[in-house]
Image (cartoon, rainbow, N blue to C red; front, side, top):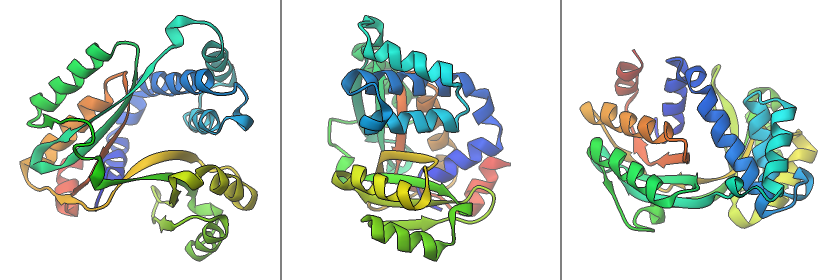
Length: 252
């Protein structure tokens, strides 16, 4: 299995998601306030804000909390001003990582991210040191109940998307990918044909994967967990590939 998605699934099975509920809300609220500050306060007129609101609803955030975050971002509250930051580097086994964040203190965040990389055998690199190994794409996720793999593929092609990956089992979803520049048009077309997606965002998708095994799997997952535990970090992307046996050992 490749990529960061199965790490998310493992963390879910280990009960980590529930334990991190407050941190998840903090990250989503920051994204909502930033999206509202940079664009319109109306989600229908602000694709980034709309995506953040979808994520908030998926996390069971209340309507009042969402509205307060939008008002805070669209007002004059200086505390709502967060800078977008991105860090790139290598983790255990030579795995490439991209870390996206929203912060009101760049020096603090850079120091904490660098410390996490160092603690778990990684190296924080310069800007664009690993992003060439990833494609910047639009990603939409729909539940398996939205239709069969063939049906989703047909509707995705009609909407102008480029790729569909359909999973299986209780954690499975349909993932639809499109070019970054086509994100808004594809989103509108998919919402008309399939309804509102559970996730709609821009993502970094690895072009190739780096295999990791043995102790490197555990250390890599510890690094990703430490980064995601940081309130300033919004997303972590990694191009690793691990065997099912290695993942099963970690999840045990």
